[in-house]
Image: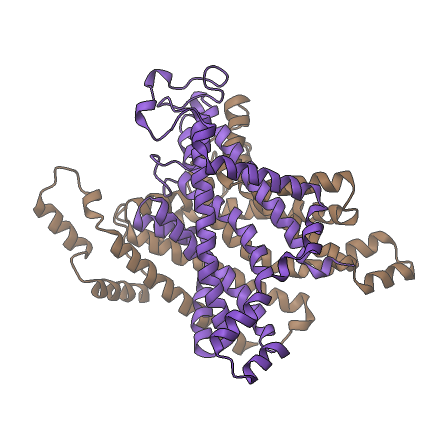
Length: 284
Length: 316
């Protein structure tokens, strides 16, 4: 792939902040992948929770405190991180697959296919994303799978429009034209010839949108329309903790919130750097 | 120009029509509000009567047709919960929401653009890095988290600012009374943190791109003072793409009042829509979304017209 050539990789590593972001993101991903090795309680297993442990402050036996059910905040955070990351990555992969394909087809074929796909995209973009997701979740109810689909419905548009824009210019280039003259089928031209030359902007957008998807999930969960509290994401942990914030149990919401912030900042640091590298107008 | 405007109006009309249909359908599928509205000891007869009274016993298409007929008369139906016309219920709360959104947008522009310019001139200086880190936090922090941290610091710990309500309202807004302003500070800061950071970053990127162009080098070679170059020649051209973004983002701001109003118990449309979605109060949800999309359409239209003024290249 053109995108991963050595020059760009070494350019990425020139920026210390971006490298820091990458390191943090890798560590957080590892924690989320193997939660049972780094926590001392499974927050989903009700037999491990004891009510007499409820609202223990940080520092004692539980180093980040406990919530009202005696759930260890630190363990819950790691499992929550797992769900937040899963929702963010799964919804991004799904929306890239759907949006990218539709964008490629839309840009390559043009005509009524293009008109229909882009009209749907226009209508969707003329409306705040959070409202669309909110209504879908209100209809379906809570659930991890449902929220992934809701975020996908909101996010495919960005990839479709970007891919379409790139295809429009790529399909006029010599290599695409000569593939056509050689009698290659339309689908092979799209996916074998054009697609490899359009991956860079899609990868950049996808990186930034992972952060957005995670924020969207957290926001919906905060409003009570996301994932159920039995399978808490970072957002639902914060929401849960917010209800007792005024009683002085600040740790139940502040620590999950800080982890969410660190996670999103690390993704944005990576995304920022990639965008700068890819932006030819910032090159001297 | 007239043809362009008419075309745009027609397009917007279609968009709003599609939105009304989709939302109507989703809310129809979402379920029957009667169970939520009646007391738990209601008889089957009560349920049937109420359904009939609200017109919910008809088929989907009949209900939608009745809705369209009402819309033609300027009526979006009566709220199931409040019993009043849905449009009135929404419009009554709209000033509170617009107040938050407009103030947050003004605040973001007022601070975002200058900070963006400052950090673009010497991108490696310590203050530019500090500004950039601040903006990174801004785009990375979910709106509800900003609100929570502010509440924790200024209400729970320090007790300086009230954490809920609108305070004393004078002439549609709380910005004219001291009590009102105290209530406004946290919601506006919460709502604007992300926008401020976004505008700041876009200004900075735009400025850095423009400052590298040949006409800036020419101006520098000619001996034009540095301040004039930055604040006149460069800023003018980097503001153009910002106008579109600010237009789109205003719509996002209005949508994100849902979160802000939930945190601060602000009596606007955002809190109303969350309650109405949970109560399956279809007329309110449809009316709210139509009004929001109307605002959206209006803003996009104003942005397009503004564009033709500031950018001679797109003049028709």
